[in-house]
Length: 170
Length: 430
Image 1: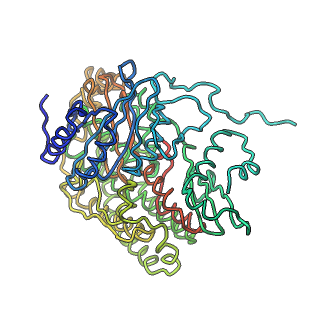
Image 2: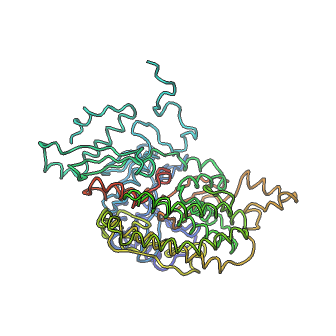
Image 3: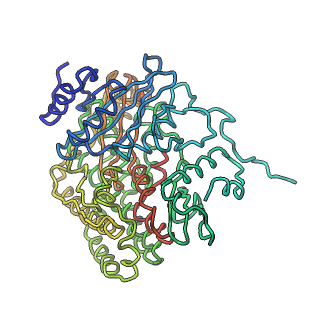
């Protein structure tokens, strides 16, 4: 598939493929957005390169995707913005279903802190070297990862402690 | 404060593990500071839990503050009290069915949320939107911005000590509610936008009330400026409070007025113009100080800019249809539904399966909501339901800023700083 890249985006992609030719798996576009999928072990190097050399200083968001029934089930997407070039790219990494783990990027973009916690809370992807890896929306006592596809929409009865609805008569 | 000390005093009934880890993480934050002042002979230290039911937290935000006298040493935020799992709900609804849920995300500016969802779906499914609908949406979005900023202004000034001001801003918000009622039939959760356009055209009554509001509101705004800009109490309460330094603002991903108060003119309306923002003239107000007063000025000026945009929209708005007439992309009009067989079938199809973007398509589209960058990421599997829908909520990212910002401030200023950040927990908690 041919890519229609603007000049600064082309530079970004070229720079990445030059420096990390073995680590960039694919570059594709969908609905006008540019997605770059990379090997998980090069995540930190590529993020550092993107921030320091290519001015992707603003991390908009990090989120997970559950590719249920596919190989390498979980995908984590980094939504990066370059204010100098006015471009936005999406960096994707995949991880295994059993013990999904990634390296944390909190020291590159401090904003990753809460976003990584959200991915952990919703999908159970653990981030190594994260300063404070706790759940963010659900309580710590909750055992499931609600945005995984196998989690039922109605929830699991009894998975969250709730106050008794009948008044205490003692 | 040590975790063991806290545990001997706090006996939580629910979520014991959660409470323990929260206090543990508070203890672990800035551990270098902790080592310096081992021991507390004067017992000036305490842990203060604020919220989730505190009126100044604007919803259900919980702060755990470690205080040394009146100074905050470190803070941890606990959010999620309003978590409803809207992203999970979205995966089980058609795109149009999901829209009323977006109203309830940032409930202070429902119109912007509707537009954010619609623009994202239109981008992924390549739906054409008529020119007139773009302008109606822009008017709606800017009215929502004014409404949201007015609530912020009223509550923040109330947090700073002035009660009657709150009533005055609500008088103006009431007018916006009336306008929304005339536009779409709902005052609050309006759900007026549709995929492929808007639900209905502006009536003459609605247009007249918008025009009237645009004429009278600048006078009110001038009065607000007159009352607050040189008000000694208000200024002293806000200047130099809750400072976010310019060099830290980008790294921590502050967004919206919080970022613009630090000197970055980052506004999605200018950066990646959507709707017809490229065709109207407006400025992005910025300030360099990064404190609460800077955010006040940014938001006040933004309201003025919104009025400017609405005026231009009213002038430039062309005549024509307000929703795409391609029956595969948008709901047919009610006339068609009631009087033609095809119209009824299409209406049925839209309700039943809805719009189906191509299999494997992905897109991200962001708009500038009153709180900052509000983006929707959608991944489609070719059916009428999204495979994954992710909401990038500006309040969520701004609350993360709050956690860093509060360290070192005075405890009396927390309410003002929360007011200055203007978080909406419905959005942050998803």
